[in-house]
Amino acid sequence: MSKKDPRIVVILGLVFLLGLAEGCATKVEPADLVLTNGKIVTMDVFLPQAEAMAVSGGKIVEVGKAKRIGRYVGPATEVIDLGGKLAVPGLIDSHLHFQGIGQAKLSLDLTKVKSWDEIVAMVAEAVKTAKPGDWITGRGWHQEKWTKRPEPNVNSLPVHDALSKVSPDNPVVLTHASGHSSLVNAKAMALANITAKTPNPPGGEIIKDAKGRPIGAFLETAQGLIRGGRSRTQAARSPQDIEAEQMKVVELADTECLSKGLTSVHDAGVGWGTVELYKKAIDSGKLGVRLNVMLSTGNKQLQEKAAEYRLIGYGADHLTVRSIKRLIDGALGSHGAWLLEPYEDLPTSTGLNTEPIDNLKETARIAIENGFQLGVHAIGDRANRETLNIFEEAMKAHPDKKDIRWRVEHAQHISSADIPRFGGLGVIAAMQAIHCTSDGPWVLMRLGAKRAEEGAYAWRKLISSGAVISNGTDAPVEDVDPIPGFYAAVTRKMKTGETFYADQKMTREEALRSYTLNGAFAAFEETIKGSLAAGKLADITVLSKDIMTCPEDEILSAQIAYTIVGGKVLYKK
Image (tube, rainbow, N blue to C red; front, side, top):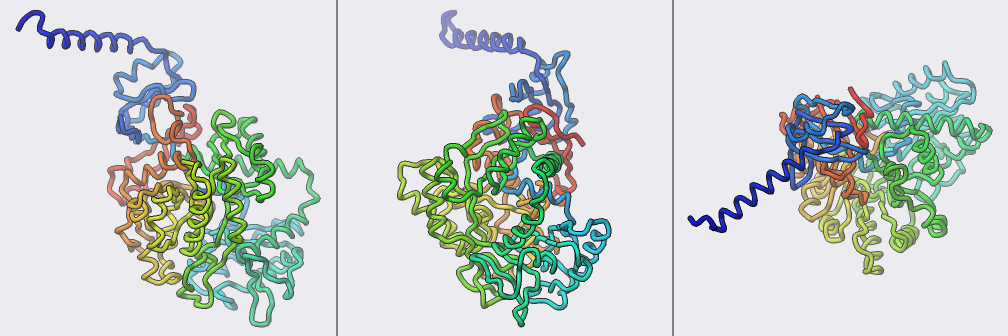
């Protein structure tokens, strides 16, 4: 070869540039935090897996090989030796009820009860330490999980007499696991002025016996009658006492979420007063997890205050408000999900439409004209169809509005004709994988085999349609722990040991994406979170076990080792 061979010139140039790059790379500022010696699954297509990462100023500086990242370690750098543990992007729960998680810590936990008698006994015990007039609350019961049917009952729901007997002076309200129905005692009904003549409110039902007597069961919007009675009895409390209790609820919820590896959550439906409470919590350093909040505010207020309500990245990206939440139906467990055909086990009912279609159309107009995302709770196949119709109509009326990322919250039971519409319209399916395996044993009872196979938790079909699925727990309906949700997504295995339509499983990569990058996308935040790459927020979850490769039956034994938000360790096991 000639000394002037251009190939040699190119090679020498590359060697020089590589040397220059390496030389420059050695001159780095020490990082605030370095994670090293682990398996880091980044969800970043350009670098799917790494060994270490460096963090400064709350953001990721570099991700790569442990040797290279080691150059960021200085005298003040906090170094976490992962010891081979799995680090993933900070986990995101895309649908939960944040205050409900905190309130559950202050109430009776009814999630594991096996019978109505057990619930009555728990209330009787609570009465012993309660002051006369204090409200006794609980949540988590599910009549389909009881070992025996209560007697007497109406449609498997217990009559209040036993509850009223053990708690004559304390009003009691016990909320269903789904949050879509409640059981109360006589004292609570008296305070709410409920009698045999009280009519059903629109979108709700007061369950009555054959003689027309309210049995103490309230479905969907009828629960508002009891909440109204409770509000009147608590009106005498000072604003300071009320705020102190609310702040305690926020702190309890924050601690619980962080302990379960969550760095961001989507709070599905609050009022503006709650947003102000969250701002105070952030300003006082009492909120570690990041919140994406959906407003449940009336159309009139939204129309008048849309600009005031919209809030992006408050408190160093700890609070965003750009979504509106609505409910078009109820829950399947309480026969409140709105169906195209009657329930298999209740042929007289097709469920409940909880908000008029015209109201929802107006909400859609306000949302699309003011830059708000719209999320509609829809569980039944009729509810999902009507919601998609509302979305499509609004989109056609505003063809200039692009990338609006509207969401169907839950999307549990969908007609086969409507599944392709999710991908076609760009509608996000904000689902909860854990509902599939938790509810699976009784879904066939409600829907029958044909409807269940056609569109119950149809993840594979939705993904094939091009739809984005984000994952969550609907806590406190389910435990906020994302690991059982991940397990449910990849196995669809119920507690009975059976698999609920195995052909609809997610892969492990899809399941992790639903809890990370898809969750970020569902909140318009994929440029700042959801994957581990330079420049993104340093939100990281570290697990004790590699859930991406371990045997399926070992996934549930994985624990949260660290929860890191903005480069700060907020939970360590």
